[in-house]
Length: 185
Image (cartoon, rainbow, N blue to C red; front, side, top):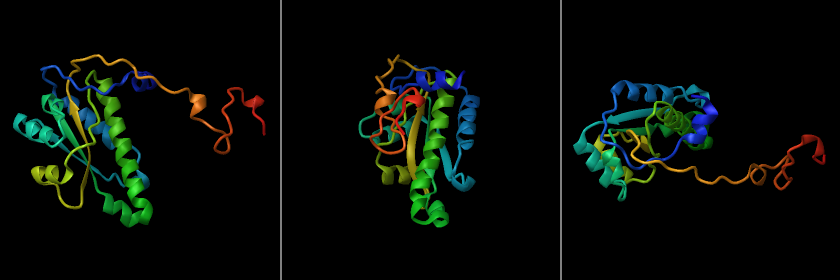
C-alpha cells in the first residue's frame, strides 16, 4: 500500500470480527515495530503478545471499561525501558524513550492497516496491576496495548484542521502562505 494512503485510511477500530488472525501477520507487525527509529539506535522497546482469551478478559478489565480489548484476536503490549535511555541522555532520556516507543507503535499501527487488519492505540490502563498480571520487570513501563483483529466496523475519516492553521514559518504566528515566493521575509 502507498504510505500516504495507509496513513490517511488507518482508523482506530473498537469492534472486531470473530475471525482468526494468522500468527505470521503478528510477526510482520512486530517486525515493523522494531524497524522504528530510536535515539542512538537504543531500541528501548519490548513486546508481550497475548492470545489467551482468559488473559485478554483480565487485561480488558484493567482498561477502564474497554471490553473491545478482550474481543481482539491478539493483544500486543508495548513496553519501554525508560531508565536505560535516561542513563544515556540524562533528563532528555524520558522524552527520547517516549518518542522512540511512539515511533515503534505508529509503525505497527500502519503495518496492521496495511495487512488488512485493525487496531486501536489503548493508552489508558491500570499500569501497576497490568505489570503484576504480566510479570513485567520493574525497569519496564507499559506504553500501549494494541488489540488486533479484523475490523467489525467502518469508521469515517475524522475531520482535520487545515494545514495553514497548524504551520508557521520561522517563528510562532508567522502565517502559512502556500506560495513561498509570497511570504514576507
